[in-house]
Image (cartoon, rainbow, N blue to C red; front, side):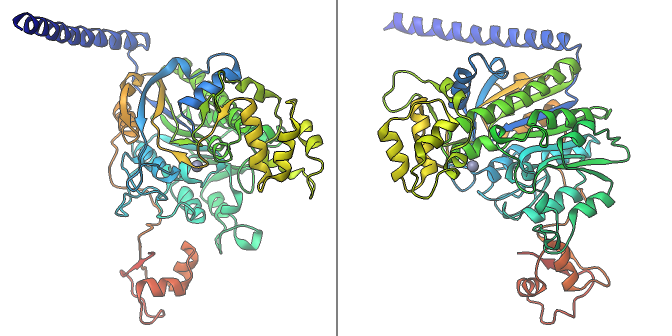
Length: 502
Ligand SMILES: [Zn+2]
């Protein structure tokens, strides 16, 4: 008994001294890192979000690629992703947590769960006079980019998000979704306002194809850059018209080139948006090729960070999608490398099937070298949803498993490179990420939102305003505003009074 106590005491002593040794060497490492970075500070932030990506995507991608991915060397820790109202988050709540450090309800952008607008890390960077940018392969008004530059109750209100991104004067915006900026009269989704025109008047240079992006030469002192390369989302990487539409890496490169001249530094968020969509479809080939496109963008960021020495690159998904596994259905091996022979998404392959699906065999062999058995062809012909059936057969051949068509609640790995990157180690929460970034770059997160943006909650009536005009400006019917605000007479509104939008 006494001996055992002695052993325990001894172990405790060893553990204790072990801690102090570790702490000492961690300090030593920091000094080494600092000296290898010439003692430089974190001046620029490149925050990269592969939507839907987690450790199983990382493993499958490594096998698909045949070697380590660019991030594999930079793994730091993991974080939880639950939202305020569910243990499975959506991209709006996850993006808000990753941008503001505050948990919110699924569907909500840039507000806490009580509806209060929260300052994002991008806005806090603007307050420090840093330049800012958002890049995505979805519409630029989609949940993840929106969570950095807008505050709205409903992620689907992409027209309001478009107006706020421009009002917020984000220096570089690159992605899809031109229709969310154009008025209905020009085929867009805005009831009345032409946000593209408004952006141009505000000093944005508008571009809409790959060549214009590659030639863009923006002086941020006098102009900003708005590149919208598709009416809706950009194409999946495997279907991208490489002449017309830029890659995610090319958009990232132009964003960095444009932002890097700011002496105060820059904040850039880059999203690989469609990894998530591939996950929802359980489309393993789309998932791997879009992870590949995202990796090329991360490579651009790390190349710049290496050269620059003052840039922190942080890479982490907002949640996992599809419950992907490396290995499936009792297989003893995983073979995602077989997915290289697939040249179209399940959705695009299914679109080629004729009405009675008698051409299934020819169609699938046109888009993959994989051999399909009679039963597999039959399963596609008889399926209620041929897209899902095609994706299921292809995933099974590659032994990539799926357990959901929605997001899952698993923890997500975080990768980081550059000054401050060591602070992401261990077990974190998604709300920790913006806080760690802010601390590394000496950005004050959590301040008042100082940008000139329409408050989603209320508008203060100015002299000469009519409810009709306020409605036009913020995309609400005046009758809706009258109802929400219970104005007895819509013609009698008074300067200084508030108009609420919910
Ligand atoms: Zn999703």
